[in-house]
Figure 1 (cartoon, one colour):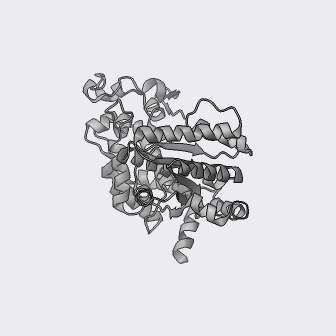
Figure 2 (cartoon, rainbow, N blue to C red):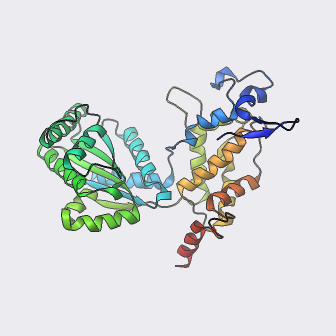
Figure 3 (cartoon, one colour):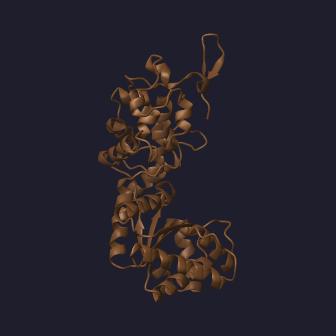
Length: 361
C-alpha cells in the first residue's frame, strides 16, 4: 500500500521516500526520550504497526467471554465454545482469552491448535498436527507413540506448573472432523487416568459450526459432543460509547513490543502524540458516526478495526503536533466499511440490511 502525492512540478512521489518523522519536528528528529525513531516515513510506520496486522485488543465482548470461561474453568468443566459471526472475530477472541489466562493464571499450561481446511483426514496426521501445535519436535512413529508423547508432555507440564490441568484452544472448530473429535476425546480420557483435567476451549463461526455438529452427532455421539464442546457462549457486537472508548484507550496504551515503551498510537502519530493527541478522545466522534448509520450503535470488532485503520492511515500522513480529526473523516470511514455507496454491494449495504432485519424481527 503506497501513497503518492503530486508535487508542484506535477510529478507524483511516494511518501515512503519523502515524508519522515523529522519533517514534522522542524528537522530536529524525534525526542530520544520517548523512544521514537528518526527517519521513519508515514508508510513505514503504518506497515510496522501492530494495528495494521491482526491486533489482539481487549474489548467488552471478549471480557464477557473470559468471565464465562473462567467460571467453567473453576467449576471443573471440560469444554467451552465461543461462537460468533465471522465479523465478530471468534478466533481473535480466543487469542484475547489466552492473554487473560496468562495474566491471571501464569502457571496454567495452555496450547493452541488450528483446524485447517486442508487437514489430513487420518488419525495419524491429526496426532502429528497436535504434536506440532504442542511444540513437540518428534512427530513420527505409530499412533500410540504419538498419543503417548502428547500425554507425557502435558503430564510433565502439569507437574512443573503444579496444576493438574491442561488447556487447549481449538481455532476453526466449525471445521472439526470425526478424527479430531476422537483424538481429543481419547486424549481427555487418557489424561483423566493420570489425574489431569483437559479443558477444551473452541472458537467457531456459528452457522457452519451448528451444521457440522449435526453431522458429527450420529458418528461421535451426542453425549460425547456435549463433553467436547461444553457450554456455548455467543459473542455480541460492541455497543455504547464506553465500549468504543475502551478499545481506543487500549490502542493508546498498548506498547508495540515488550521491550518498547512506545504505544500503538504514539508509534503511528509521534508528533500528534507529543502534542497531546489521544485516540480515546475521539470516541464521541466515532460513536456519532456509527449511530448515524445504525441507530442502535452496534458494530462488530472487525468492522471497528477497519474503521480505525482507515482513519489512522490517513492521519499518519498528516502527523503534526496540532493534529485535528474532522468529524467527516470518521463518518466516511464508517460508511466505507459498512458498504454504503459501493455500487457492487448495492444500497443499503448487506450488513446494514442484516442489522435492519434484526431490528424489525
